[in-house]
Image 1 (spheres, rainbow, N blue to C red):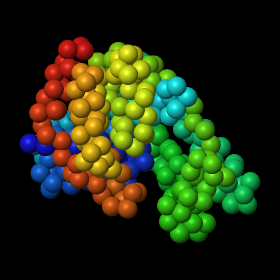
Image 2: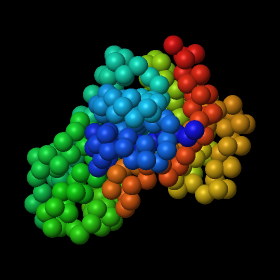
Image 3: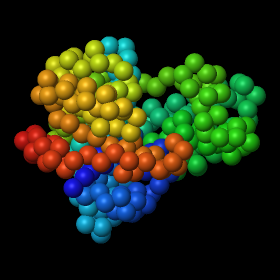
Image 4: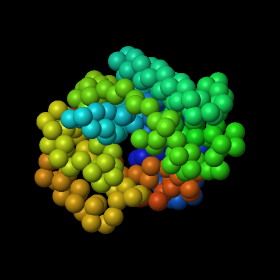
Length: 273
């Protein structure tokens, strides 16, 4: 039995519906899935229903952008109460932050002579958590770029003309919020973030796990973070980070996390309640 605990849908910056992700996961032979859209849990109800139909275990989740020591990193929350008041209030706050950032990026693009409209970006996003990929799609649709990769390379990456900073909560705030909602907090793709030095600090403020298995982790990276997780007494998770067709190819099922790690995750989450 295997799981994929890092998946995105069109409720944030993926291109697949919850049903499409679940269908692909079923074909890949997965037994458990977690939906981890950015700053929203709006797709969880549909994903849970789709998983029930396919006989797949569903785990609610979300991905949060946070700050630690002046650096940006991502945290994954799992197994929390979707209706928790504090969680929902925080999500609404950062969804507004996302919309404001889209506005700022469009203003910067307009300053570059690109007549993009905020309204069109939000129409393309059609979700509560718009982001850079939606601005990129609007650039491609308008004929200003040929591909999403080109849009990021020319305009949307940090240091490029349309990049705009995003307000972030601290890692400690995010971990506390996840715990208050009855969930567990996991550092996403540490091998990509390349900030190993912050792991002890995150552990000190309550980090529960590390995403050791990840699409872009090499074998040596995976082994390193497995040892790191053991050293700090952390849970082990893993996932593909599938965004549908946004990243060149669908990745769902590319990473298959052994189910034993899911059982440990659920056990720790049950103790949070």
